[in-house]
Length: 226
Ligand SMILES: C[S@@+](CC[C@H](N)C(=O)[O-])C[C@H]1O[C@@H](n2cnc3c(N)ncnc32)[C@H](O)[C@@H]1O
Image (cartoon, rainbow, N blue to C red):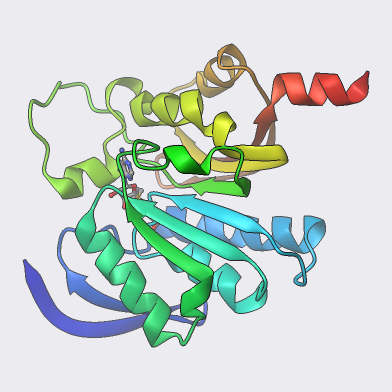
C-alpha cells in the first residue's frame, strides 16, 4: 500500500516514506551505519574506485551515506522487495547522488547476480535475523525483511554460502548479526562455511545483542600468508 509521502532525515540523508511494507531505518541500521563509517575511514581512501554491494538494501540509507563521501565508488543495491528498491532509487534522486554510480537489482540473495562473481571489494548486509520458530508457508514482504527463520540464521547462512564467490581477491563482507540467547552460534556457522572473521563492534539494544563482523574467505588469507 502506498502511504502519504513524508520525508525524514537520517545522518544527513533524506528518506521518503513511500510504502508501508519497506524496512525503514531502525536502531540496527544506524548502528551498522556508524560502524561502517568508522571502518571505511580506517581502511579506505575516498578517492578509491571501490565496488560495493549492499545486499537487502531496504531504503538504501547505508549506501547513500557512503556515496556522499566515496565519490569514486560504484554501488549495487539489491533487495527482494520491489518497493524497497523504489524507495532506494528515490533516495538516490532526492539526495542528488550520482545516478551513474549505482544500479538497483531485484534479487533473492545472489540469484540474479551470477554475472558479478569476483566483482566486489565490499559486501554489506543487514539481514533479516529475528528467530522465528513457526515455519511459515507464505510470508508477506515485511515479514521477510526481519524474519531470520529458525535460530535467526537461515538467510545469513544462505547468504554466506554464496557471498565469498562475489568478492574480489582481497574483498570483505561487513555483516550484522544479533545474539538472542546465551551462546552465539554465528562463529561456528561462519567457520563451517570457510570464513575468517573478526568481531568489529557490538552493542546491546533492548533484548538484542547486535554485532558487526568482518569476514573474508579463509583459504585466500592462508594462501597470502604462505
Ligand atoms: C533488516 S532489513 C535491512 C534493510 C536496510 N539495509 C537497513 O539496514 O535498514 C533486511 C532487508 O533485506 C531484504 N531481504 C530479505 N530477504 C532477502 C533476500 N532473500 N534477498 C534479498 N533481499 C532480502 C528485505 O526486503 C529488507 O529490505
